[in-house]
Length: 104
Image: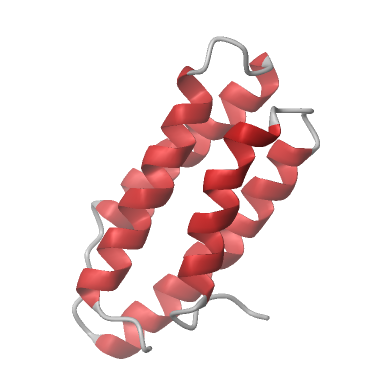
C-alpha cells in the first residue's frame, strides 16, 4: 500500500508513542531514555509538525523517516534496553516499511 498523509501521520504518531514509552520508563538505561527522547522530539519537529500533502514529497519524507527510525532502533539496541521496550518500536518500524518507506 502506498503511503498517504493519513498513513504517514499514523505511523509517525505510533513511533512517537513507542519512543516516549522508552523515554519515560524508569528502568530504561539513561542512554536509552536520552536517545528515545531526542528521537521523539525530532519526530515532532521533522515529521509530525511538518505535514506534507504533495505525494512525491511525502514519499521522500516518509522514506527518510523509516531510515531515521532504523538508525534510532539500532542505537537503542546498543544500550541494552529491555526487549519489551524495543519490540513495539520494531513492530511500528516494520509496519512503516510495509508502506514503502526506507532505502531498503
